[in-house]
Length: 311
Ligand code: C5P
Image 1 (cartoon, rainbow, N blue to C red):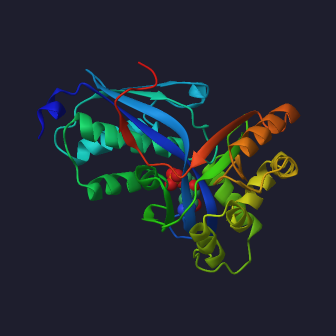
Image 2: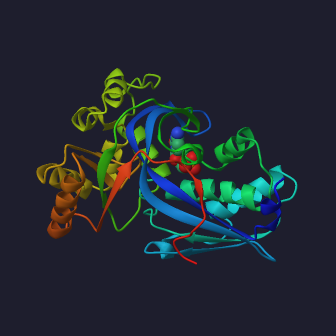
């Protein structure tokens, strides 16, 4: 172990949000989850998680969405620190501070991102140097999107989302996100999807060839045409105004748009930075979205930062 590892009293890890470029939902499983095939894509909208040695476990959240994040035992970052401490000897209490930019309950895996960042940060703080397999096993037990937040980039997710394999793709994509002021519960959206598809024969999920071809091409227009989300109709059903948000973004010049994961954030793909700015301005001015954010993808998964955004 390096001396630096022993002397760390505080570690900050930055972690990105995700959008699902494709989300194919299979039939409900006996355990209540759904097998799925998804293409995860990490975008440069970040939370920063700082862990500091402390006499007792705690979590605090800062940023525009802070008041919507629970700080009790149900907080996924706190759960992540506890689970890693149980899995590896040497885990001692930490104070977790989350500087939040990723929308809460927005379909962008913000809670999962914080959990992934906490695993990486505690691993470094405690000098565990845990095997990636161990981090992946703990991550999978915390939620379906945590493994991808460790990995980042563009990747295919299978199982319930926790099995992640990087995709070789080209291109750097510019995104605009229309954020709602009220989140949606992932469980509720999956349940609504089941209700809408009741009686249908649902095939085993697999990645679509058109999406794989689009990713290989690196062409934003091809990717825009290939984007799809089986949870979109369910999100529309629970939040009908999202249809109007999607229509507004397309009308204002987006190449394509899709509900992000279980929503309610709507992700728009544009041709470049100018297009992103134009669309963000138009969406903001129209009042179609509560908040509008821009980001580029793909970006790296959870990673150490030496200079935190906040002290
Ligand atoms: O895994 P995570 O805690 O993020 O999932 C939240 C909820 O979303 C689950 O309790 C389940 O109802 C639903 N879900 C699902 N199938 C998946 C992922 C999530 O039904 N593959």
